Length: 247
Image 1 (spheres, rainbow, N blue to C red):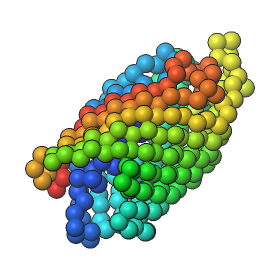
Image 2 (cartoon, one colour; image 1 turned 60 degrees about the horizontal axis):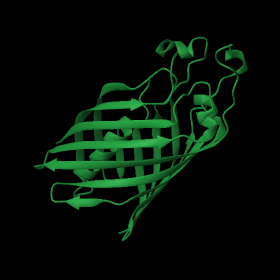
Image 3 (cartoon, rainbow, N blue to C red; image 1 turned 90 degrees about the horizontal axis):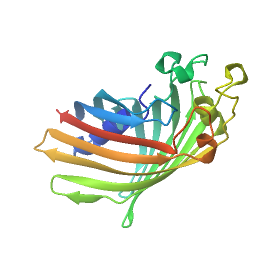
């Protein structure tokens, strides 16, 4: 199975560590993480993999693993950025007997916008992305609220999120085409879905160069995904433990 958002979660955290007053300074972070995830597919179960990570930041531009962004507007409490990212979802026939006779579901390249608001009540973010590679041909919009607790050597941030995925996106990754239907795997079209997520992310810093990241989250599927013959779970869980060295 392909990793979904773990590499993104790890590499995005690097920018928190390498941020400095010199915005034009080149900053580089290298590291990796052990990632455990269960994508909810029937009889597939959880997987643990080691994921390398690289981050490069220069001025308003960030290249963080499969995620790139350019912040074209910011003030003390608001940022607006153009984003591009690889969606690492999908599967191949050889991943599991469940997918035998099905077409591979590939990763995609998505483009969009992200707005971040920092308020006295916590942090809000709105993100919209659209498939630019004609893979799933859909879009996704996410609203996130986080309440960070900052300490001398790091931070812990509980968060909740609502994720709306279009029909094209959800049906591509969880649907079964007429040509793929069997007696054990019926034809099924997935509708647009709103998935809810809760989680805790944390970053811990040691000296000027070392960071440890630990995240855990659970996403509850919309009913239209739960009813897919490819799915036998009510949601997905993710666990990440990583280390980054900042040069």
